Image (cartoon, helix red, strand yellow):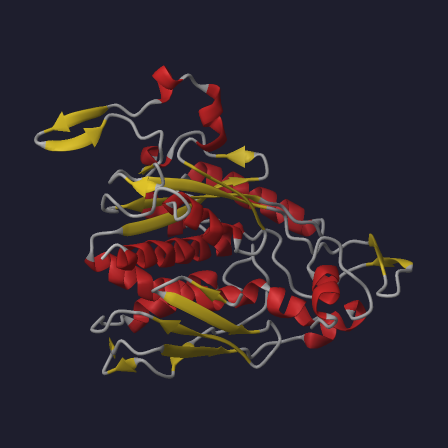
Length: 353
């Protein structure tokens, strides 16, 4: 399963320490003007080495389009693209070829396929998300024409979390700090925690919140093609994602129906709701309100301290990882969450025609 989507469909390829990461996008409507600066900007938000809070691996991550584009416009044919890997340190992984890293995909890949690429995790590396960001950027450009906007931000790192819902913050300030948090004070606390954890050779997780505005009424299916299920599927396919909830999510279980229902009212000739506990989706179908959801990310499995594990022969051993790793995935995962949301919404928009 290296493909995502039904009509707007991405197939990605490549490994962390292979020659390149790339993909093929099928089903992109013809006539879309590609803003190459915007696409590269989205990749820059994901790339390594952008701050002291991320892995120091240096990659330009410049995308090269191979097909499906003529004179800066999509032709309706498959869009092929590639991003070349230029700064691999494969020797950092020589020691793990014969051991299984705790909480990584090493063991499960080996058992499933009988072979694995230990260099940076191979196909299981988050570097694969480059392809998602390219496709997501193109999806965003199309959705922008339809008045649909997608914005994600870091809402929690460890035990430091924002105290209010997304509407209480100026989300245009998300890019003002390396944590990608719209609350400057909380961002400073989050950054300090990540730096502290990094200095100890450890890692930390957290939560990303995403808001989709301008979605029309009617996207999604009432049974197995529910829009929130599709978004959950998209988010849980991201590396290190451990949980998904939309609207009030698990907190919805705290309230009575009389407290939690979104009441309809006639808003100057248009049907509206006074609240949005449903998160913009009811019965699996978008209702025109803001769609908002949260994705929980675990702490990065690679810690620069000694851990117990076993060799491929099953012998107990100790492993101290080397290499360049993120102490926290959240800052670089923000654009990936947006990309997956954009591809999902565009796919359902095309399916609704």
